[in-house]
Length: 190
Image 1 (cartoon, rainbow, N blue to C red):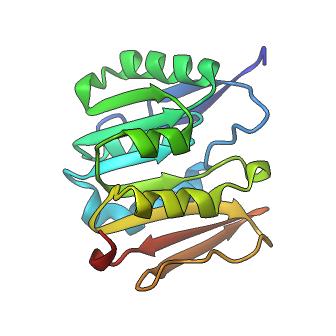
Image 2 (tube, rainbow, N blue to C red):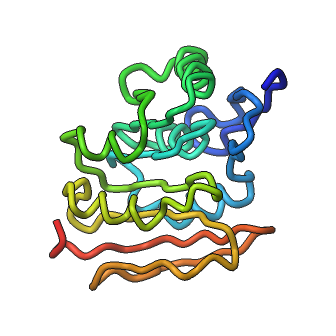
C-alpha cells in the first residue's frame, strides 16, 4: 500500500493530466489503449451524459468521461485510500461539481441513490464475482435512463454475462486477461 500508481487522461479538456492512486491489490486502471477504444465507442453519447463509475478505483473511466463532456460523474469506491486519491485528483484538475466521489459499497450506493444514469462503468475486482448482482441491482433499483449504455470489464474465461431481455452487446474487446463489453439496454426495463 505504500507505492503509488498513476494514469493519464487521454482526451478532452484534461488531456495529458495525470491521476495518482494508491497501490492496492484489486486496483487496476484500464490501460490507455482500452480507454481510447471505449471512448471512441462512446463518443456520440458522452456529451452532457450522467455517468456512474462503480468500483471506481483510480477513477480513470469517470475522469475520462468528465474530461470529454459528461455533465455529471459519480465515482463510487469503498476503499478509503482510493477515495482520498480521487478527491485529491478532483482538486488537482479542478473538476468542480461535475465529479463527485462517494466512499461507499457499490450495491449499497445503488440501493440508496436516487440518480439515474446514461452511462455506467462496471469494472469490479475480479475475485469478488459481483457482476451479476450489480447488473440485477441496477435494474431493480431503476438506476438506468432510457437507452443507457453499460461498460463491463471481467476476467476472460469467466462464465458469460446473463443479460436482461432486450439488452445487447454492441462491442467486445479482449486485452490480456480481461474482456470488455459495451451493452445497449432496452428502455422497457426502466
